[in-house]
Image 1 (cartoon, protein in one colour):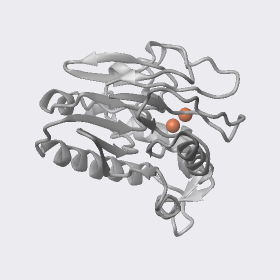
Image 2: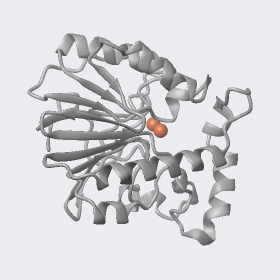
Image 3: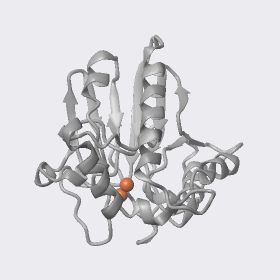
Image 4: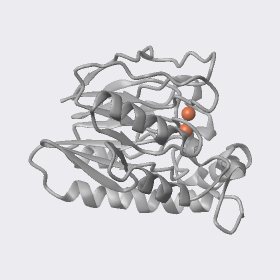
Length: 254
Ligand SMILES: [Fe+2]
Ligand SMILES: [Fe+2]
């Protein structure tokens, strides 16, 4: 199947663009498209123009200046009856391919259990997520909240993957699933634990054809065992995301 993949377009900081017409059957958005529902409105316009399904997994930035998790409910209501499918622990079937989508978040254990508390504390102080997103009670989102979300999301994902599927399986998350997704310059940086978790065992024990992610601002396209790991991120204005260059026309054949 031919798909187009985009993430980290960060339209809150730069002009939107239209996705060019290609042979892709499905468009996948892996989060950080814009803040609030701006990315959803853009996705609906793209889906209408291209007459293709657009699968949208939220990043962390969608929630900035908004209450969590109400925005996902709003997005699902807004996209009812459109070609846009907001996936948060949801599956979407296209032909023989199942897409399993969730934001994911992280377990703060990229550097092992010994460094878990230090990583969590570092993220609490430095990740804007924990200042820019509030809960319904107006208290800021905490690492303990995103840790719980990671736990729920990874368990959901493994339950879905445990169900036999005769066709292809594509996982879409915002946060990354293996340390191999990390920009080498951040390899020793404990803040990476707020971007990536080590889910190599999930990849090892399940039949996943492709895993699409965003968030790292580092583009990858490699195989871990039988699973192709892909990210196609644009980044902030003036930023050149390392790895494979960003291209609006790029089509992945899964
Ligand atoms: Fe981003
Ligand atoms: Fe992000």
